[in-house]
Length: 289
Image (cartoon, rainbow, N blue to C red; front, side, top):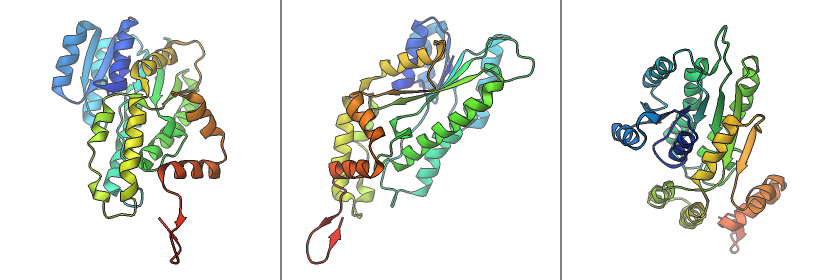
């Protein structure tokens, strides 16, 4: 199994769970120190792969390393987990940040997939049992949350390309499963709590952003444990007939079923009211933010 972004959070939990189920895991990390720690923790059960998903030369070297290790064996699974989240009001977020968001979450996922597809069975005269691909999306792949526009867009794109890829790979028998976690309790929320929002202090959104951040961070820290996602990854890779999409959401009815069923205009007002985004009339000059 190959798991990208395996040093922390969902990736680390997934690596740990797959090893506990008897799989040898190739875990991608970006720092030598993380590779050393991974070897110390798991010994011969894990092979660290040192690459960033945006570094195509390093990715190609990693794919060759996996191929040499496997020999004639098939790669059982690829878990495209590596990703970042760019936040901010779309009216003001820097375009370079948006480009980087897509470079990691979308182009990076395509690059990794292309690099490992031959090992999963997408090659001529392949005779073994084909592997599977798990794409780590998010509830944001279906729901557009304010102030997470770049991230939301990248996850919508990831889900669209996953559908296309799954159908294209029918000729090889390689399946593609999309997981859609909601808030997951990982250390990422500690980083989010320290994020600098001062660059938006001059905007009309400034009075709203601190409250939005507090709401999201608190909700995130109360989310599902990463082990829940890890178990879902294992199921997606091993179940006889896995569902093509699996949502993993705490308080599923309120946080997933209702939002995905409501008319879009209703959902707009529900989110807008909760976050303080609804237009209001403050006097003779008319409504404003």
